[in-house]
Length: 98
Image 1 (tube, rainbow, N blue to C red):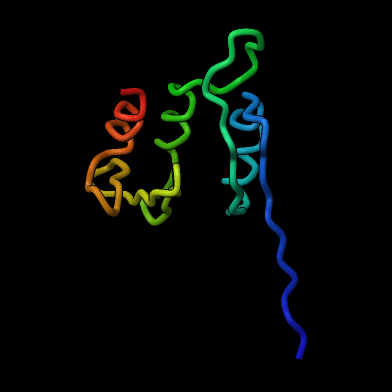
Image 2: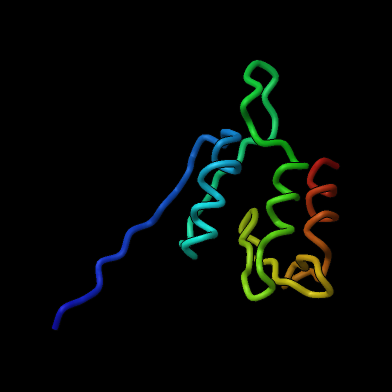
């Protein structure tokens, strides 16, 4: 019996082009991937910031889910809701800073 070969695609450095170049290609071809996003850098200006990440989340289809910080978020009422705590991803991120 022949088994399917599988690969994992990851982007580990959080550069802005992960969002502007890679993400549209992955979305177009329905390819799952993991993007490790660095949200702030004082010395290098080519990193994604939270506004860009939230913009990317707006174009995800409602059947998809997001795993963020080991928490699952699914679409409900046009926004991503944490499956365990029932809070929005926006409120979840805000609470991370406190």
